[in-house]
Image 1: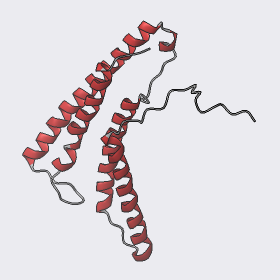
Image 2: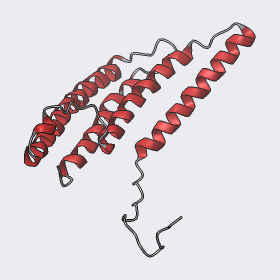
Image 3: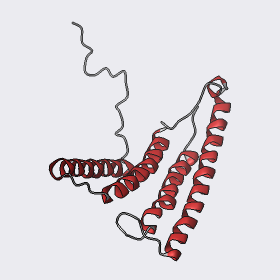
Image 4: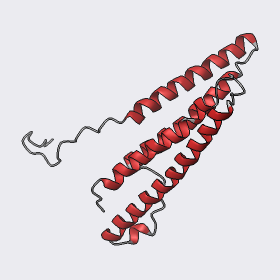
Length: 165
């Protein structure tokens, strides 16, 4: 069997993928969700009692995971895209379309951050508490503007990065 000599390199060495805080946060959220669910199942199985409050926290974690997943998807370029027509554009047209799509994403998450901040402020002013745990509701709603800002940050990074077709 012919093996290439070690001096011959057809490919460039792979660069390590940069670490993003979203990946660690996603792993932590998934671990907490698994532990909460497992503890709830065991408790129900052995005692016929369910931890009702865990549903509230689990729903919150799923919402957080959605935003973290969106930020990760945009960072990696794996976000949802329908490219049937875009792929038929010339290279320069694809670059401009990509910029336009990123600007649309910035607009959407900007509106979400704005309305999320208003919702958070309303929860702070009214002193609304969560139904399951009785904690201030703003603890949960604060995630919407903060994580929308995270997604916006990642979108801005992509927009400012040198676009290649």
